[in-house]
Length: 254
Ligand code: MF3
Ligand code: CO
Image 1 (tube, protein in one colour):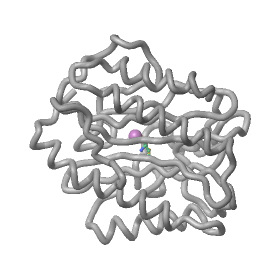
Image 2 (image 1 turned 180 degrees about the vertical axis):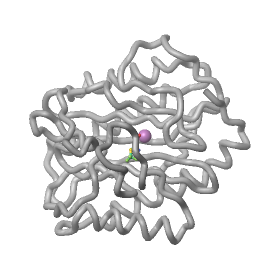
Image 3 (image 1 turned 60 degrees about the horizontal axis):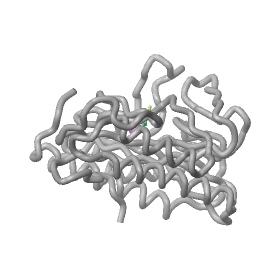
């Protein structure tokens, strides 16, 4: 696993800022009656304007039935991760998760947010807040010379405290010149175990929580991951650089 120098971490900042700005823009742009393809098209415009490069478009790991067709993952309600942009029309109260990674100046950043469109409900808000708390706890544990298990345990602890279901498949990952690098960042674990978090480690931390049970199903497209019981899900992600002075959230939104 390659550590980044302080200078390289500085070089990753434009990618982090750009990814953050696109998510902020998408959140404001999303309206009831739009499709998830409309969100994807808006992101494509912003990518083109910035001279950035999508790392999703055409991405084809073995599990995908086809190369990834969009620049965003748009996962609505029971769809948890890797939702393909489509002609699905967004409705009032939908719980919309948007995951976006992009390359700027040769470096990648990866981030996701979940929000409820229009009318909010206490149950969905509690789920979203818990997911954000799990991410914040994971980031707070990402201290120099702590261990990976400290991050994982912090995430798992919030899931248990808030009572939402956690499935530990599909965790976070190293980020750098490419989107998915070592190490894996599990969404649950034991404190004091796992690799030591040396300064220069850059990782995406990405808890996803479920309002019902912890089982999921994968659609025939090989991509879309949905809760098996149809309950709501939420996802939050930041790209975090571990420095001598502590964690730096490269994808922080204002
Ligand atoms: N950004 C996702 C993650 O957090 C991965 C998306 S896969 C893609 O790891 F195909 F959509 F690119
Ligand atoms: Co990620």
